[in-house]
Length: 483
Image (cartoon, rainbow, N blue to C red; front, top):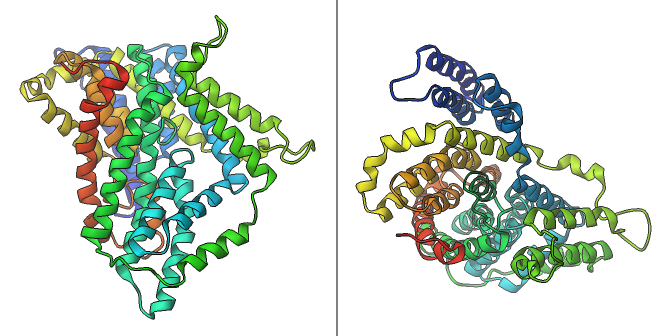
């Protein structure tokens, strides 16, 4: 099906189904407000899946439709778009833009690749590690776009030296870039939108605070485990690689390193601001104990302080040329901020209208299942949904439902919510599942069966690891009981 036809189907089908729901009357046992929210949810889901409108544009619907439907006041509908998690993302994006502006991300990647060496399987590990590390702080889309040309240079070198295409290395290397970008984002709240959405939603709805450092204690182990499994999957099972050096790779990396030259003054200053911001995020609980009484620290505030510093610190000397200019923000992914805000607004409406409670009641029979099995099924559903819609839309759709279900079966909401956030980013099988998948697929070196072959096992592993993290790490980090 062509993209144009899919959009026309979405534009027609979405309003038709939503209006039909509203005109058919409210089913027995359902609150009228909940039914109106259900119609809006169906409309947004259809438009998100078909991309009938740009995904961020669809995310603006709650601000417009919730007041028109009488579900919430304009102030209530718009408030989630200014959630502190949105400001945390904004600050993180600005810091990432400065890193990209001055080329610091490329230098970090080359250092890691230089350490990895020239052996083919270790080279794949180096690409995956570099991509994942950058993706924790820079958007996974930008990270994949930056790493792909370096990866293709290595592929071209192998082809030149061997006189033939080394297809297995090509597939493992390029898929390693895509998968590393997806996995790295799991490590921080700003790494991928579902993480920030989870923190924002739990704070907005349940007054449960998930701090930046707390999430790293959950996300980083998950990222490391998934990276290791992805590397084994790519280099040992899906595309087995011989463990031997590739002639010329070390020279290629050295040429790239010489080309970018020595560390510049702007790079040093950006690196200092970035490191200070990251340290402040991680050590915020300790900092709160030493700041004067009445001073309130937040992850969003720290992010904005770091971002503002970039506009105040000169790039070199004391000249009025700063590390970041407002013109640079034209490339800021504003759509992601709107998407997270729209998801939060819809999620609060689903919960507040009683729709989540009603749907959870329909699913209450699932409470008879063993809780680990239920958590695994929810994680698997989130991973599969993310293959056909954005991971943020997946989180926005499922989180209100699973948290209501958690209350219905008397378990802590985080036990079901954390697997949704983690598994929503475990979409490895299709090019349309994530931007890094699409970027790497665009190299025309990979087929869909290639991606499915490696990604199917990894998607299943993502659901299992997300379930394990919810049981083994999250209760200890966030202080809740699984009983």
